[in-house]
Length: 469
Image (cartoon, rainbow, N blue to C red):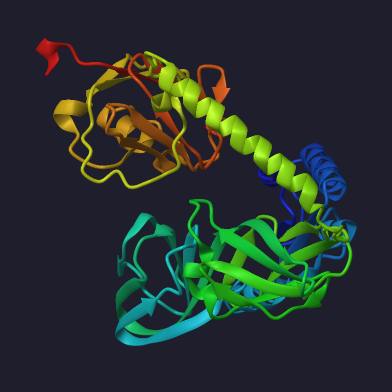
């Protein structure tokens, strides 16, 4: 119980622990039993204070005397479920997952017999991760999954299989399974999306109509309206009331009559039966109605005098310009090469220089020697990642999100870095904003800090000497 509570983070909206137990707290001696019971009571109190709900799944006949785990459910606002034996657990799991917890899941097919195959079409490839849940009697040693994704993870059991796809790159997933005994497998799909909203508007004073646009992107700054949300699974609420909308140019378009200054609360409600959406789905848009001033009569005499004065001034300027013997050209002093660029296509640009990699700190305090990668000689790709750099340098650090730190070449021999992970990236003392692209020139360095893995990586960008090419 104490270890389970350590897994939660303060920002989580819902915190729940599911405890499966025979009910009793019984150790070898009375002193050990009392100590264990006290620790359990303390953990339950911490769960209650932290807003953690504990559901207890009690197996077997309920114990009426002695120290038990049953009170944890009532103390934290959870539920006590009594199951006759362990066999009942497999039938209860699906009911608990989809109905009690309300996990969104869409049925996507069945497999029966000794040989089965499922061909699954994902709704889109804009999700952070997709989960395929196989429930029912199965012998899944001979299980194969064919798909394109950044990462594939399979968790197997005798009555379930969970297939997790990190950032799927193609919509088609093929699952094949063979068994010596007949299978009865039901398949469900669930997906997780990260949502970022942005809004803007224009106002027509003649019709008093405000046209409101809402942009919807995922963690990789890809438009979520390019996927299934353009056709289904979403409502738009304005100040709590459903509003009609259209999808136009990759944005949500609303029209609203506004006669005075107003701040609108725009909320997206996702209604598909398989998606879990993280991020803020509510945004405020302030609409200021411009003041229309009454037009005064035009003073034609005044403007005629002004026009004549301007014309005379222009004639004097032209005359003075012709008499000048020399006009020195002005030089543009702004160095555009140092400006941050918006993300664009890098096709056809080669890498130059080399990278020197230093592991400043890691959780295990392993002293890794500095490593170097000759990009000019070894890298013939358009985009590399921090994960690729660590693998190439044989640095066995598995850092969550390293595959989402992108490095691309630019035509001025610099490299462009974009951080789409939750890591902290510093260029000198400058914090690189997540989702933005930044240049790195020769003899500059960046530092990557991964808080969860307690690791710090430093990468220097160097020019190649003639003898290194």
